Length: 200
Length: 95
Image 1 (tube, rainbow over the protein chains, first blue to last red):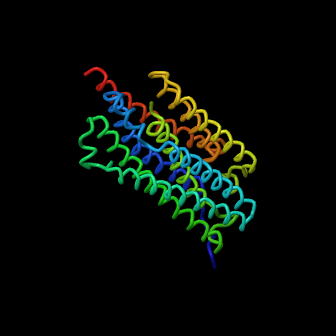
Image 2: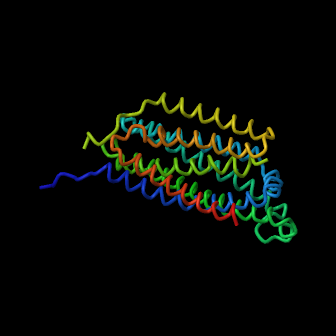
Image 3: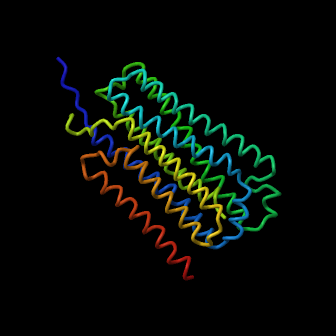
C-alpha cells in the first residue's frame, strides 16, 4: 500500500526564490559599497577599471548568457520528455561554467602575476581609491566565481539525475530550481560586467 | 498538480531572448567607450536592468508563473534593496 506522493511545485519554487532574494541582498551589500566608493573616488575607480581585461570580461559575459540559454532550454526539453536532449543541454551548461572559471583563472593569474592582489606591495603604493577598487573586485568577483562553481556542480548533478531518472518529465522541480540558481549567477554578472570592466 | 505548472516555453522564445541579451551586451560595451560623463554609469545600469528583466521574465519563467506571489515577492525584494541603497546615499551625499 503506497500513499500518493505529495508534491508542491509552487512551494518548492517559492522557497527557491526566497533563497535567491537573500543572495540579492548579499551581492547588494557589495554593490552598495561599490556605489559609495565610486562616488568618493570616481577618477581612481576609472583608472583601476582600465587595468582589467575587457576581452576576457566580455567573453565571460557571452559564456554565461549562453550557459543560461542552455539551462533554460533544458527545462523545456525535460518537460517534452527529451531525456537525452536534457542531458546534453545540461552538460553544455557545465562546459560554460568550466570555461568561465578557466577564463577567471587566466585573468587572475595575470593580475596576481603583475603584483595586483589584496595587500600586495605594488597595490599598496597606489592611491586609496584604486586599492578599494581592487579589494572590492577580488571579493565581489571571487564570491561570484564561487557561485559559478556551485552552479556548475548543481548542473552536473541534475544531468546525472536526468540520466538515472530521478528527474523526468513529471518530476522536474529540482532541475527547475537549479536552473533558477544558475540564472541568478548570470544576473549578478550582468551588473558586475559594466560596473567593473566598462567603467570610464 | 498539473494546474500549478506553467506551460512549456518554446525553444524559439529562449533563443530570441538570448540573441537580444547578446545584442544588449554589444550595446553596453559600445556605449561605455563613449565619454558621456555621469551618464555613462546610468546608461550601463539601465541596459543591465533591461537584460535582468529579460533573464527574470523568460529564463526564470516569471512571465509564465500563474501565482501572483512570485512577482509581488520580487517587487518587495527590489524595494528593500532600493531602500537599502537610497538610505545609504542620504547619508553619504549629505554628510
